[in-house]
Length: 332
Image 1 (cartoon, rainbow, N blue to C red):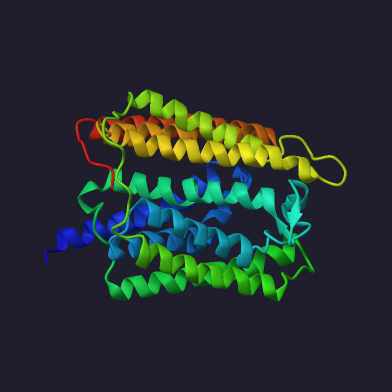
Image 2 (cartoon, rainbow, N blue to C red; image 1 turned 60 degrees about the vertical axis):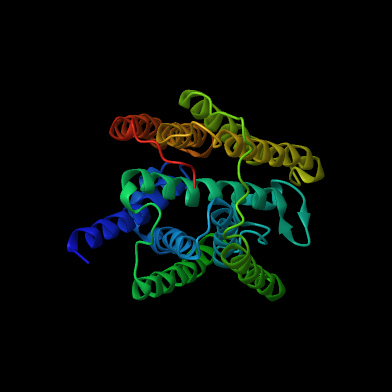
């Protein structure tokens, strides 16, 4: 094996490691720009975690269904075991977003499943494939590297548990049955993603052609903003939280996610190109950054900074679009 392919795979791996926390945290405002120095501390969880997902799916021969299922594993590991936010009655005021069922913050959980699936996992992987197309269908790491990345990802979950809850939710300890259930669910879902789903990706229906890339981008932006707006309180919830009436917005958000996923699956039947991927990522990223500027930011500095980031994101993706404008790659 020559040195060039090895270096190319390493560059691709590091690109994904960098993009995951940037897409998920920095460009949304979940991590205030005034605290940007914290971003490297998120690399073990986000960067290594998403790289581990990507490597496992590629080695198993899986496609987007496997990535989505492992994204749920990622969310359970981060929010359920690391942050303990799925069960905490206090952290992020998540208990007030909607009904608590069996001690779980259901509206918060739904929002994070969709958010992490798209912005922590799918978009960083898709962008990395676009930046490094020669390696999009093959693993980046050898077995030793895969083991090392897995260890770093586990360390990332431990770091979240050790540093975030004690400072932001002091005194809270998630119930052991809940932690055991989350761990068991992670194992079962991983088996499904890597042993059951590979080779069973349903083909898109014939006779459907993708619309223009700009339409895909607008759909991505619309779906992102509406999904987040339905689940994340734009104004502080009333005393006692939003309660059971939040089931309506939760159902609408779930329906929106399903419809968007089905549309993308149908559009991939014919005429789906890298330009569509870039517009899809751009619409979703710019949409979630502008939403973060309006809802997540608490200072003028952060609000203006996120708007600037949205513009920079659009410009960078436009440059990437010029680079790959004429390359057609079937949706995998």
